[in-house]
Image 1 (cartoon, rainbow, N blue to C red):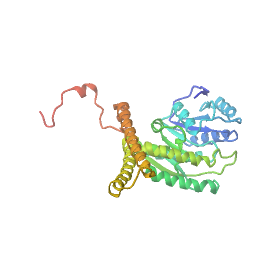
Image 2: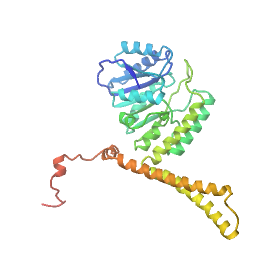
Image 3: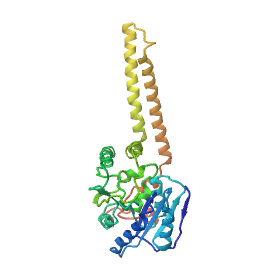
Image 4: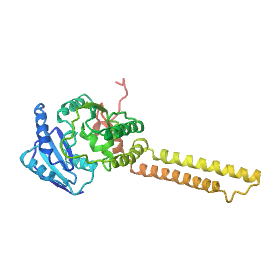
Length: 340
């Protein structure tokens, strides 16, 4: 991925606002103004705004460069072509300097005035706060499929949210550094964070009607989203135990094949019937072979996982400690409780 970036000297920041952009030239100036006005109510927080041009074909990049040239808090990245929202967010996360990250869409439907409430939830102990567009200003044709999508995601991932895919979110930076961002996985950031043990909350936020441009997503977004939901299910439920997934499928397939072949054997032995030309024979053999292959894939996946896993991965799962031992302490003599 090639990124052209405007590089400016910026002060240390606590909050990075990340905004993927695709053909939103009419909204960017207003958005920066609203973000600035919002942070004026939080004078103790230093912030930055990072725009990512995800292959815009209008004048969005020109507007971003002008904003970056006139505002020291604004930076802009440009992807070589349209890679998708997940890739744009991943590029922005790599550039972010803040300890906390706020994401929002560039179309002005997400209200920057809600950011202080999201940050307050982080201060209260949450690791990621996802907005919930309770009064969503979108056509019925978008709202109904979205409700179904959110229900399915909640059932499959175990994280029950009203709006998994709200663009307005706030999180500790480490959450975005750990969650995989590729394909269409930006829709499942809360679920992936929840699977990694982070504390995820939801907060009802104001949602505004679109005044400029048009939606960049059509019906195909739900097709891609459904496919990626299978990926999320695999990652969240079986990412650390692949043999349970492939082995389970293999055992089910092998069992069905065994039953079919056992039935044919009984028919052949006790009924004297010819079974060589029966489709069930071929089906039973195929199911047994498939079962062996699936179990083998699961065992190979376990070997790969075992070879690539290390103590660093386990250490990344620790959220806090009561004490950190220095090397001298760890190697020194241990005294039992109550010893003189």
